[in-house]
Every structure is written in C-alpha cells, then in structure tokens.
Length: 184
Length: 146
Image (cartoon, rainbow over the protein chains, first blue to last red):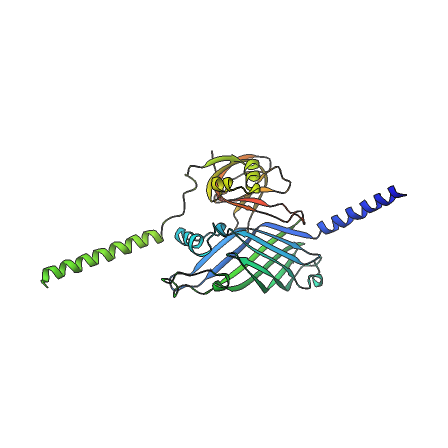
C-alpha cells in the first residue's frame, strides 16, 4: 500500500533527522584569544562571542567570530587593531571550516581527554589558508569541550604592520581556542 | 651663535619633546568608551534581530559598532568562561537570540523578565542552516539601562 510506504518513509526520515540532531553540539559564547609578545608591550585580546558547531558524526567543526568583539586592555590597541591591522569594517568576520580526523575513535560516552588534529580553511582578513592544528577534546560528566593553541604568521593573512612599529611587533601571533559545547 | 639663543633653542626643544611625550602617553592610555553613561538608540530584540539578519546597508549604518539599548524578554541567563554574565533576549526566530555579554552583572535576573540592556552592537553571526543552528546578534560590554 502506497500510504504505508509513505508513512514508513516519513518515520525513517524523522528517525534519521533526530539521530543527526543528537550528534550536533554548539556554543555561541566560545572563547578565542590571541597573544603577541612585543618589545613595547605584550598584546593580548579576548573574544567571548564565538559561534562554534561540532558534528560528532562527521567530525565537521566550524568557528565564526566578529573581529570587532576582540577586547583589549587598552582602547588605543583596540582602535589600531580594528582600523589598521584587521580592518574590521572591510573584513568583519574570521572563520574556520574544517573537520577533526578520526572523530569516530573518540568514545563520547566516557570521561577523558583526547588528542585530535583538525584540518580546514582558516579565513582571517579576507584571506583563506588551509591549516592543520592539534587540540584536545575533553569529555567531563557528559559535557564536551575543545581547546587548541597554534601560531599564525600575520604576513600569511596580508596583515601589514606599519613600518614605524614593525621592529617592535612580532610577526606571528598565538591563537588559543576554548569552547564548552552544548547539545543541539 | 649667542649663548642666550642656544639656551632658548634647547629649552624649546625640551618643551616640545615633553609635550609630545605627554600627548602620546594620553593617547596610549585613553580610556575605553563610557557605555554606561552614553546616549543610545533604543530598539527591541525582535526588531534588531530582524534588521541585522536582513543585512541591509541602512541597518549596518544604524546599529553596527554603535551603542544600542535593546528591550527584550530574557530567554536564558548563563556565564561565559571569563565568568561574565551572558543574557539571551528572545527573538521571533527559534534558537536565535540577541546575545548580550554583560560588563556589570544583574542580580536576580531570570528567564521571562523584561529588561533594557545597553551595549555595543557588533553585528550578526550566522549559524548553520543545514545543521539547524540559528545565528545570534551580539551586544558586548552591556549594562542594564533605564
């Protein structure tokens, strides 16, 4: 009977959809900070408004943030970062779209810390580069969090340092990611 | 050159250097924008969310990187990793919120309360429509307003 087939199809579709949903974890207040050691003063800024989505089934991982949300200890640093370095009016977002290798080896039902590698496209200042970085997936009482720390070269993302301060600002910056996920 | 003239030149040079250093120091140490006491354009969470998801140029000029006071119904109160209070205001999109990171925590605030929050509107980040995760509009350095 066609009506039975349709009902069966819908039930299978709904079951598949709910299974996929159960594998999606996200945060809208993840934290990404960067640090740069300089002769003048160390530069550190935090962004606590990062959207990150992790799919446990496929291993796909994404981050998206607005550059203007980076908060610096000094207002002048923040102004220079937005106007001269990252040009946040022209390039408002930074993103990462990629995946975690061998995510199916992680037992998400047990507490533990898992060393993982993520590969994907990092877009900063309108420039996209394929990167691979290591990080950790931490499972604690059923809650999933992720951390990673890696360095990028400013030159790779066409971020120019004014010549007057070029010998005082480091060519690379360290990026640290910290996200606590909740189930979709 | 006359000794007196030389002394004037040296003195002028010292004054210029001192003034330039003072101005440089003041610029380098200027305080962050005073959001708490700033005048803000008023709107509500539903209207702000709808305006920014439409992504029109007019809206960007009106709200993005501006101090905005937003009326809304509290959907959720939580803490971020810096222990700052995060208040989500309801919109007409399920799972989509106006996401406000507080500079000053509000005591005894709970879901269902109506509040006016003032902060810098930095824009909208889209979620993932395929994975059914809606995006949020973000306000940072927020205070309760009246």
